[in-house]
Length: 145
Length: 145
Image (cartoon, rainbow over all chains, first blue to last red; front, side, top):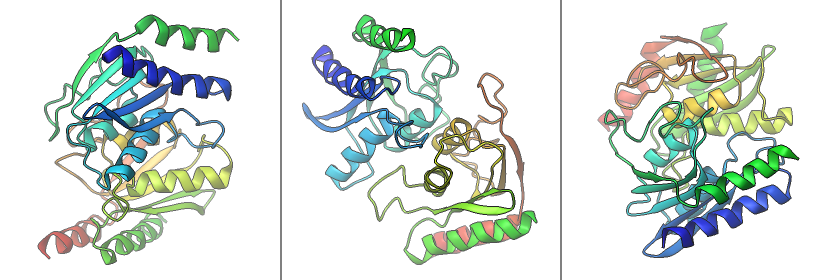
């Protein structure tokens, strides 16, 4: 099941790749259904907030008509940065499944870990390494070219 | 000068107040000119990413046709959360002037300090207490009602 949804996140990453954007994708799942999808489109939109996770949260919130994404899970191909990890906490997402880790800016275990920070009012469960190779490979291919 | 721009941020906070949203406002200044304004509209839009700072960054980026907001300063009435502080770092904003502190979720000195974290590739200068009383009062008034 985890792999099934991470594959959907990878499809989103491929869309970013095809547009010449750093290939990162995310989906949000509730009760087994995808309620939000997003891919990085920062360069195209001249907008640093257009990360995959932010777009997926915006779409899921619109669909749910609520900013509270209780009992929702996110699948994301790359470890979220502090902006995205912060948005995930604010949106009350229950659990985040991560593909590849981001040792330069990752805020879910690499540079710091906002999810494990019990100072916030919401704790986000998290698990990494889901389809790790596939998630890393699309990034490697992008940066090689 | 600092007070002049914080007053503009307070005008944005007032717009949020008038809509029944937690009254937080932000403006982004480059070369003495305001290039982006934003106010919290999370409830109205069912969207946790609609914080004042994110909206101001999106508007300034659109105006600059670049996600890099080099040499820009932000004035914000309340200490940014981790999502917004992360966005400010990503956008390469030079300095942030803060009004009131947020002891529950502030990520610029209260709960944690992302700006002083030298692990990231960009360091954001920051100063707080600009029109502190005015920035606190509008929030106190909102939460009393």
